[in-house]
Image: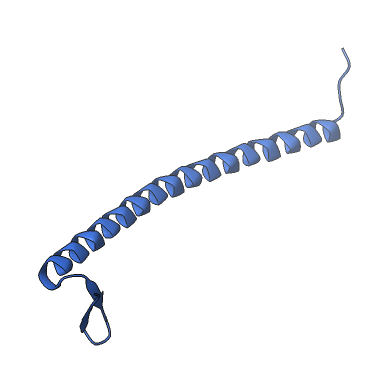
Length: 81
């Protein structure tokens, strides 16, 4: 059996440490990606809820005032013919 030098052992150990650190970092990135994907899903649901609420308000205003546009700056309603 041949014995390798201490320097060679240290090189291999150093590579193993770098490998383990890299695997750990990849795992952390995967967790972050998962969390970001979940956050994206939540934001998409919030966007859908806001869009639905906007449609509801637009329908309520149309039922009350008829078809038209509202100036958010002045609060004035302009009917369309």
